[in-house]
Length: 264
Image 1 (tube, helix red, strand yellow):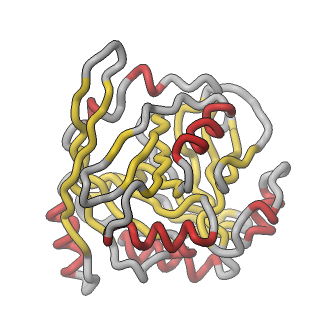
Image 2 (cartoon, rainbow, N blue to C red):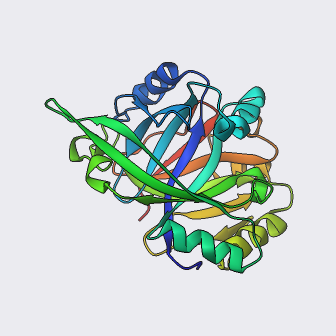
Protein backbone atom coordinates (compact mmCIF):
# COMPACT_ATOMS: atom_id res chain seq x y z
CA UNK A 1 0.00 0.00 0.00
CA UNK A 2 1.15 3.54 -0.73
CA UNK A 3 3.11 4.99 2.23
CA UNK A 4 0.96 6.84 4.82
CA UNK A 5 -2.31 5.24 3.56
CA UNK A 6 -4.35 3.23 6.09
CA UNK A 7 -7.37 2.32 3.92
CA UNK A 8 -10.73 3.67 2.85
CA UNK A 9 -11.69 6.73 4.90
CA UNK A 10 -14.97 7.80 3.30
CA UNK A 11 -16.90 7.98 0.07
CA UNK A 12 -18.16 11.18 -1.50
CA UNK A 13 -21.75 11.19 -2.76
CA UNK A 14 -22.13 14.25 -4.99
CA UNK A 15 -25.60 15.79 -4.60
CA UNK A 16 -27.42 18.71 -6.15
CA UNK A 17 -29.51 19.67 -3.11
CA UNK A 18 -27.94 19.11 0.30
CA UNK A 19 -31.15 19.32 2.30
CA UNK A 20 -33.03 16.99 -0.02
CA UNK A 21 -30.15 14.52 0.14
CA UNK A 22 -30.04 14.64 3.95
CA UNK A 23 -33.79 14.01 4.08
CA UNK A 24 -33.55 11.08 1.65
CA UNK A 25 -30.79 9.32 3.61
CA UNK A 26 -32.52 10.16 6.88
CA UNK A 27 -35.67 8.36 5.73
CA UNK A 28 -33.55 5.20 5.38
CA UNK A 29 -32.67 5.35 9.08
CA UNK A 30 -29.28 7.07 8.84
CA UNK A 31 -28.20 9.67 11.39
CA UNK A 32 -27.22 12.66 9.26
CA UNK A 33 -25.02 15.40 10.70
CA UNK A 34 -26.01 19.06 10.57
CA UNK A 35 -24.87 20.81 7.41
CA UNK A 36 -21.24 21.92 7.39
CA UNK A 37 -19.63 24.60 5.23
CA UNK A 38 -16.05 24.12 4.07
CA UNK A 39 -13.48 26.90 3.81
CA UNK A 40 -14.46 29.50 1.16
CA UNK A 41 -11.82 28.40 -1.38
CA UNK A 42 -13.44 24.93 -1.43
CA UNK A 43 -16.92 26.28 -2.26
CA UNK A 44 -18.72 23.23 -0.87
CA UNK A 45 -21.00 22.13 1.94
CA UNK A 46 -21.70 18.69 3.34
CA UNK A 47 -23.59 16.35 5.60
CA UNK A 48 -21.82 13.29 7.00
CA UNK A 49 -23.07 9.85 8.03
CA UNK A 50 -20.54 8.50 10.52
CA UNK A 51 -19.74 4.85 11.23
CA UNK A 52 -16.83 3.27 13.11
CA UNK A 53 -13.70 3.85 11.03
CA UNK A 54 -15.32 5.25 7.88
CA UNK A 55 -18.25 7.36 6.73
CA UNK A 56 -20.38 8.67 3.89
CA UNK A 57 -20.11 12.32 2.89
CA UNK A 58 -22.99 13.99 1.07
CA UNK A 59 -21.23 16.81 -0.74
CA UNK A 60 -22.76 19.70 -2.64
CA UNK A 61 -21.60 22.89 -4.36
CA UNK A 62 -22.35 26.07 -2.44
CA UNK A 63 -20.23 28.51 -4.47
CA UNK A 64 -18.59 27.65 -7.81
CA UNK A 65 -14.83 27.56 -7.29
CA UNK A 66 -11.97 26.04 -9.29
CA UNK A 67 -11.67 23.31 -6.67
CA UNK A 68 -15.22 22.03 -7.27
CA UNK A 69 -15.21 22.27 -11.08
CA UNK A 70 -14.89 18.50 -11.50
CA UNK A 71 -17.82 17.84 -9.18
CA UNK A 72 -19.94 20.37 -11.03
CA UNK A 73 -19.24 18.55 -14.28
CA UNK A 74 -20.19 15.26 -12.63
CA UNK A 75 -23.46 16.72 -11.35
CA UNK A 76 -24.42 17.84 -14.83
CA UNK A 77 -24.89 14.16 -15.58
CA UNK A 78 -26.08 12.60 -12.35
CA UNK A 79 -25.90 12.46 -8.57
CA UNK A 80 -24.10 9.58 -6.93
CA UNK A 81 -20.84 8.09 -5.74
CA UNK A 82 -18.21 10.36 -7.23
CA UNK A 83 -15.02 9.85 -5.19
CA UNK A 84 -13.27 7.56 -2.74
CA UNK A 85 -11.10 9.03 0.01
CA UNK A 86 -8.35 7.14 1.80
CA UNK A 87 -7.03 7.87 5.28
CA UNK A 88 -3.54 9.33 5.22
CA UNK A 89 -1.37 9.84 8.28
CA UNK A 90 0.70 12.50 6.51
CA UNK A 91 -0.71 14.30 3.47
CA UNK A 92 2.57 16.00 2.59
CA UNK A 93 4.47 12.71 2.63
CA UNK A 94 1.68 11.03 0.69
CA UNK A 95 1.72 13.50 -2.19
CA UNK A 96 5.53 13.31 -2.25
CA UNK A 97 5.22 9.51 -2.63
CA UNK A 98 2.91 10.01 -5.62
CA UNK A 99 5.41 12.34 -7.28
CA UNK A 100 8.22 9.86 -6.71
CA UNK A 101 6.10 7.39 -8.72
CA UNK A 102 5.77 9.84 -11.60
CA UNK A 103 2.20 10.92 -10.80
CA UNK A 104 1.35 14.63 -10.68
CA UNK A 105 -0.15 14.60 -7.19
CA UNK A 106 -2.04 17.70 -6.07
CA UNK A 107 -1.66 19.11 -2.58
CA UNK A 108 -1.52 19.09 0.27
CA UNK A 109 -4.64 21.28 0.43
CA UNK A 110 -5.60 22.65 3.86
CA UNK A 111 -9.17 23.45 4.84
CA UNK A 112 -11.71 23.19 7.64
CA UNK A 113 -15.35 23.52 8.57
CA UNK A 114 -17.21 24.55 11.73
CA UNK A 115 -18.96 21.69 13.53
CA UNK A 116 -21.98 22.17 15.82
CA UNK A 117 -21.45 20.23 19.04
CA UNK A 118 -24.40 18.16 20.33
CA UNK A 119 -25.80 19.94 23.34
CA UNK A 120 -24.64 23.36 22.15
CA UNK A 121 -21.50 25.15 21.07
CA UNK A 122 -19.22 24.73 18.09
CA UNK A 123 -15.79 23.36 17.26
CA UNK A 124 -13.79 23.12 14.03
CA UNK A 125 -12.82 20.13 11.93
CA UNK A 126 -9.51 20.58 10.10
CA UNK A 127 -8.11 18.52 7.23
CA UNK A 128 -5.18 18.21 4.85
CA UNK A 129 -5.84 16.36 1.60
CA UNK A 130 -3.91 15.32 -1.47
CA UNK A 131 -5.32 14.16 -4.78
CA UNK A 132 -4.29 11.80 -7.51
CA UNK A 133 -4.38 13.49 -10.95
CA UNK A 134 -7.96 13.92 -12.16
CA UNK A 135 -7.43 11.62 -15.13
CA UNK A 136 -6.41 8.78 -12.77
CA UNK A 137 -9.97 7.68 -12.02
CA UNK A 138 -10.36 3.87 -12.04
CA UNK A 139 -13.82 2.94 -13.25
CA UNK A 140 -14.60 6.66 -13.44
CA UNK A 141 -14.16 7.17 -9.67
CA UNK A 142 -11.74 9.89 -8.59
CA UNK A 143 -9.50 9.25 -5.58
CA UNK A 144 -7.88 11.39 -2.92
CA UNK A 145 -6.52 11.02 0.60
CA UNK A 146 -7.55 12.85 3.77
CA UNK A 147 -5.55 13.56 6.90
CA UNK A 148 -7.79 14.28 9.88
CA UNK A 149 -6.23 16.73 12.31
CA UNK A 150 -9.32 16.77 14.57
CA UNK A 151 -10.89 13.30 14.51
CA UNK A 152 -12.90 14.11 17.64
CA UNK A 153 -14.72 16.83 15.68
CA UNK A 154 -15.76 14.36 12.96
CA UNK A 155 -16.33 11.03 14.75
CA UNK A 156 -18.85 12.33 17.30
CA UNK A 157 -20.41 9.43 19.25
CA UNK A 158 -23.96 10.75 18.99
CA UNK A 159 -23.63 10.88 15.18
CA UNK A 160 -22.24 7.35 14.96
CA UNK A 161 -25.43 5.74 16.28
CA UNK A 162 -27.34 4.74 13.18
CA UNK A 163 -31.04 3.95 13.58
CA UNK A 164 -30.83 1.32 10.84
CA UNK A 165 -27.98 -0.51 12.59
CA UNK A 166 -25.28 0.27 10.00
CA UNK A 167 -21.78 0.12 11.50
CA UNK A 168 -19.53 0.57 8.48
CA UNK A 169 -18.78 0.20 4.79
CA UNK A 170 -17.99 -3.36 3.75
CA UNK A 171 -17.45 -2.79 0.03
CA UNK A 172 -17.55 0.02 -2.51
CA UNK A 173 -19.20 -1.05 -5.79
CA UNK A 174 -17.90 0.41 -9.05
CA UNK A 175 -19.51 -0.41 -12.39
CA UNK A 176 -17.17 -0.98 -15.32
CA UNK A 177 -17.41 -3.15 -18.43
CA UNK A 178 -13.69 -3.95 -18.00
CA UNK A 179 -13.35 -4.83 -14.30
CA UNK A 180 -9.90 -6.36 -14.80
CA UNK A 181 -8.53 -3.15 -16.25
CA UNK A 182 -10.25 -0.87 -13.73
CA UNK A 183 -9.12 -2.94 -10.74
CA UNK A 184 -5.56 -3.11 -12.05
CA UNK A 185 -5.63 0.68 -12.41
CA UNK A 186 -6.78 1.15 -8.81
CA UNK A 187 -4.21 -1.35 -7.54
CA UNK A 188 -1.47 0.53 -9.35
CA UNK A 189 -2.50 3.85 -7.79
CA UNK A 190 -2.47 2.35 -4.28
CA UNK A 191 0.55 0.06 -4.67
CA UNK A 192 -1.92 -2.75 -3.93
CA UNK A 193 -3.20 -5.91 -5.58
CA UNK A 194 -6.41 -6.91 -7.36
CA UNK A 195 -8.02 -10.30 -6.73
CA UNK A 196 -10.91 -12.19 -8.25
CA UNK A 197 -14.11 -12.68 -6.26
CA UNK A 198 -16.72 -14.21 -8.57
CA UNK A 199 -17.72 -11.59 -11.13
CA UNK A 200 -15.88 -8.90 -9.16
CA UNK A 201 -12.29 -7.76 -9.18
CA UNK A 202 -11.53 -6.41 -5.73
CA UNK A 203 -8.79 -4.13 -4.44
CA UNK A 204 -8.42 -4.23 -0.66
CA UNK A 205 -7.52 -0.88 0.89
CA UNK A 206 -6.35 -1.82 4.38
CA UNK A 207 -7.05 -3.96 7.45
CA UNK A 208 -10.65 -3.58 8.69
CA UNK A 209 -11.35 -1.12 5.86
CA UNK A 210 -13.64 -1.53 2.87
CA UNK A 211 -12.45 -3.02 -0.38
CA UNK A 212 -13.31 -1.54 -3.79
CA UNK A 213 -15.05 -4.01 -6.11
CA UNK A 214 -15.33 -3.60 -9.89
CA UNK A 215 -17.85 -5.41 -12.12
CA UNK A 216 -20.27 -4.67 -14.98
CA UNK A 217 -23.47 -3.19 -13.63
CA UNK A 218 -25.49 -6.23 -14.70
CA UNK A 219 -23.18 -8.45 -12.66
CA UNK A 220 -23.56 -6.16 -9.65
CA UNK A 221 -27.35 -6.43 -9.87
CA UNK A 222 -27.11 -10.21 -10.24
CA UNK A 223 -24.83 -10.51 -7.21
CA UNK A 224 -27.15 -8.45 -5.02
CA UNK A 225 -30.79 -9.39 -5.65
CA UNK A 226 -33.07 -6.42 -5.29
CA UNK A 227 -30.79 -4.04 -7.14
CA UNK A 228 -31.73 -2.85 -10.62
CA UNK A 229 -28.95 -2.43 -13.17
CA UNK A 230 -30.82 0.55 -14.62
CA UNK A 231 -30.34 2.40 -11.32
CA UNK A 232 -26.56 2.23 -11.77
CA UNK A 233 -24.25 3.97 -14.25
CA UNK A 234 -22.61 1.92 -16.97
CA UNK A 235 -19.31 3.23 -15.65
CA UNK A 236 -18.74 4.89 -12.30
CA UNK A 237 -19.45 4.63 -8.60
CA UNK A 238 -22.53 2.42 -8.33
CA UNK A 239 -23.14 1.73 -4.67
CA UNK A 240 -22.12 0.57 -1.22
CA UNK A 241 -22.38 -2.68 0.70
CA UNK A 242 -22.97 -1.70 4.32
CA UNK A 243 -22.51 -3.74 7.49
CA UNK A 244 -25.61 -3.71 9.65
CA UNK A 245 -27.10 -5.52 12.60
CA UNK A 246 -30.58 -5.21 11.10
CA UNK A 247 -31.76 -6.95 7.94
CA UNK A 248 -33.39 -4.69 5.37
CA UNK A 249 -33.89 -4.72 1.58
CA UNK A 250 -31.58 -2.85 -0.82
CA UNK A 251 -32.32 0.79 -1.54
CA UNK A 252 -31.14 3.69 -3.67
CA UNK A 253 -30.38 7.14 -2.25
CA UNK A 254 -29.25 10.12 -4.37
CA UNK A 255 -28.07 7.82 -7.15
CA UNK A 256 -26.18 5.43 -4.87
CA UNK A 257 -27.33 1.80 -4.55
CA UNK A 258 -27.23 0.52 -0.96
CA UNK A 259 -26.95 -3.11 0.10
CA UNK A 260 -27.37 -3.95 3.78
CA UNK A 261 -25.62 -7.08 4.98
CA UNK A 262 -25.18 -8.77 8.34
CA UNK A 263 -22.06 -10.57 7.04
CA UNK A 264 -18.98 -9.87 9.11
